[in-house]
Length: 164
Length: 164
DNA sequence: GTCAAATACGAAGCATGCTTCGTAATTCAA
DNA sequence: TTGAATTACGAAGCATGCTTCGTATTTGAC
Image (cartoon, each protein chain N blue to C red):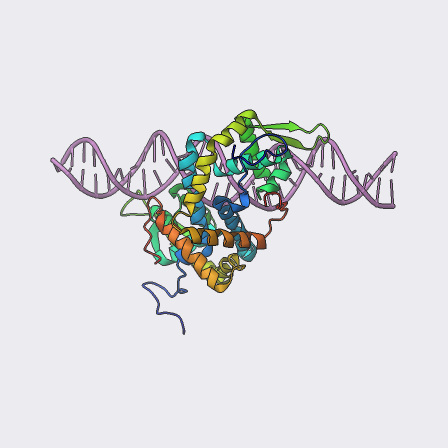
């Protein structure tokens, strides 16, 4: 048997440390970013996802929910839930489209636009802090590699391009 | 004003493309990994988190829920929920500790240990595939950088060390 | 024009993930 | 030894994220 000698207990596979598994490390990175973001922007009651949505809306001016979902690479129904919460706080308007009554045209309210401006600085700092343990050069490499992975794994309905 | 000229509509900040924000890219990476993992291991009805838990249990042999939560850097109550679901499928045993009736000692059942062995190959392939768009050398760099970031942002109650 | 396909939503259900609050059991210091 | 801190859980609540199924509306092929 090429198996390493059994450990206390039974014979098992040689364990693959969690701390070396890409999926585990990615989950941790996400966890770390969310924590840093909340620390920086929690006072504004905005989550990373909501910041993404507000940003996308600022670019689109107006868009239906499916389009927004594609913009931020998020499931449609999840996007709807997030938009509802933003609408409940009067940061977003969700009016039924008169020209296509299936759709809901979303748009930033003045309050939403104002909030976006207010949190912009803190949000960007949080994003940068996430990679703060890497050198400037490494950060650029890291981002480039992430972009390459994302490009190689298109979401089912990626509109993409909009933000590039 | 150093601001770029205003776009159709109003004056806003120069938008920072989502596709360049570390937090957004990390969320996408997580999304991609989960999708790849489901594709590879969905037939076994196992999620990435459940795989982490089963792995941690295989190493620990026996552990209370709080210890497991620290092992996989996950919130305690979330861990409890996942363990309950595994227990409901008879993959994990959650017996009240006779020596400390506050705690529940968890342990892999034979079915759980067998399942872990069965999915090990597919799970590892899914983890590797997540970075599949990078060269071998880049993958090693990428993992090393993620580890550095994780090391620089300890979870509140990191037991860590166990898997290193 | 009409009817099937496509589209945009909504509802429901499950699995993460987090926080806060409450409870039961254990520990440890005075 | 007794009573306050600590510890391990559980429950509840909110926010993601996903899938599947159903409904309303529009489009487009014929």
